[in-house]
Amino acid sequence: MAADVTGEAANEPPATPDFPSRRVVLLGASNLTRGISTVVETAARVWGRPLDVLAALGHGRSYGMASSVLGRTLPGILQCGLWPALERRPSAPTAALLTDIGNDLFYGAPVEQISEWIERCLDRLARCDARTIVTRLPVCNLPHVRPWQYAVMRRALFPSCRLTLDEVSERACELDERIVRLAHERNCRLLEPRAEWYGFDPIHVKLRHWSRAWRELLGAWNEANDDDASRASLSRWLYLRRCAPERVARFGIERRRAQPSGRLDDGTLISFF
Image (cartoon, rainbow, N blue to C red; front, side):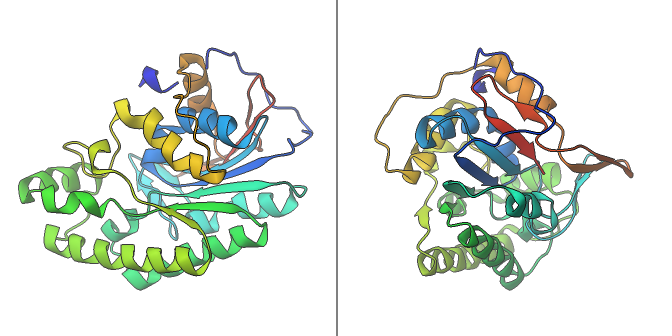
């Protein structure tokens, strides 16, 4: 875990912040959550710093419904406070990432419904003229997944799911096709994860590939060709892990936190939803 993360100390966010002149919107689930420190630093290197970062993320996060993992419940990405917060922000050049599409398949959501949720997210991002990157589902891994391997992963990550490997594979391919069409229709940059980024776990990028993977994905915001990996920092990783989201329920008890909830030494503001 520690390999993911700047040596800079972070400060408490100001009560009435002056928002940075460049903005990043991050939408995703477990890959985004696990790599958030690398993502923030890579985004700053690619898009400029300081940044106004608004992120809706979380393990098992759904795009359109509340999701619970180990007693922690988060609203769907479409229903979270990121969108009204984005509308209240002053205008700024905005880059966006929409990733980790597919969790909702394991929650039993129909492909058509998931596609509609993604479409609504893209439409909202288009209203702020965001330069949006969409990552495809890692369907490249499907031919290599064995039934026993899938069973282990499903029980560990989505214990309520009863879909077979064949059912999930068919729905994932259909959803991926719809995502490709949506991205093309809206002139979003569409990127496909590389098979070598994954291992036994077919949906989570290996830690050792985080820097390279996020550099390749986020570099599409401005066609950056700098191959330098983002600098690791334990302090940044620990700090971002402590930043609380705007709204979360733990074992039924809801907690709220004003956003931004964090600020890095370069002036980057962090808002989690």
